[in-house]
Length: 402
Ligand code: HEM
Image (cartoon, rainbow, N blue to C red; front, side):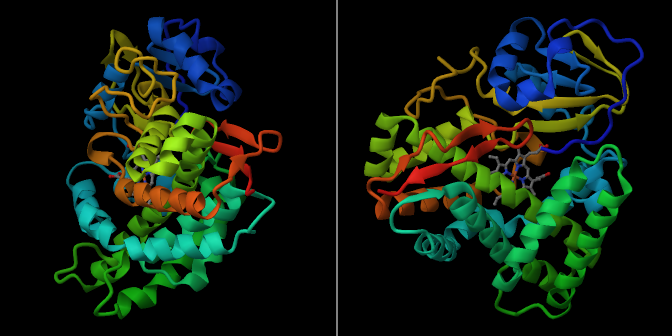
């Protein structure tokens, strides 16, 4: 999900002819074509244009995700750690477990089900704000505000803050790709982090007794599981993790459904089929394309020597279309029968905390659109397909409302 910011070039690198040709633009435009080229002969490759190692075979990628000792996230110099401080996505071992367990209660299946009415309320309000007819760009007008408001309420932040949160998000997003350590970008992000910490301070000092939000439950816990600083850093990663990802999940699922008429018809007719479409869209076009791991000591993967200090990118979109595990992997087929799971939410200790909540948001958001606009259809001419190397989402999801 996040770069660790290190682009150390190994001193002795065997030649990877296909990896040598990979560019950021190709990965952004059509990563799946790149993965098809790499997987058969260079499933572990060095991509000089990115300064990173890419893993595109599902079994090898699993080997990386299952081995947090060798492939780690806790890189001190990473932009994400520099911006938010230590939190669950950039720690390992007991510290990570403590952070994640402390933050887990509002995200477990039961709690998410309990928040259904709250999410439905947000979805309904956003649907009412759309025009009744004409055309609308749904990613920014619908999916994005649903994602922001939902995660803000789960964290325990009031509606009045939603706009500020989006601005902060954009500042953080710039900082997390600031490998060049540009001072102005860092300063802006640190100021936003301080403002966020200041905004939550009163809620931590005097938590509402009846509130089951993330902040209130962490602040009320006795003894405290996390101190104020740790709560702030983990709330920041939860906030960051819940915004663009879920906006992209909703938009990608809609894109997949609206470009496949048979799936569209079935998803409209049945909730179970809508769930299958959302799940298959997670496999077919995952919003988060990479899990980034740092190699503190030289490692051997599939006979390839990965040097100390390297950055390994587990390519989730490649795992999800590995033909050794999925039949006709390039096909969007919500009724496929493989028992193997997709890894759109990652795998292992860093498996996404918000998976159940994100799925619920997508389900309710898409169902509301289908119920309110029976003739809703993609406007091919004005829409732009999913793109992006790390976060992938439609450039524009323009629909006719009928
Ligand atoms: C409510 C929405 C969401 C929230 C609050 C959220 C939050 C988080 C958090 C806190 C983590 C770090 C967990 C850890 O390190 O133990 C995480 C990991 C992850 N999330 Fe989410 N997330 C959300 C939605 C999504 C969506 C929609 C996707 C993709 C479709 C996604 C993909 C991932 C992936 C791939 C990881 C693993 C990163 C890694 O191992 O490097 N998340 N998420």
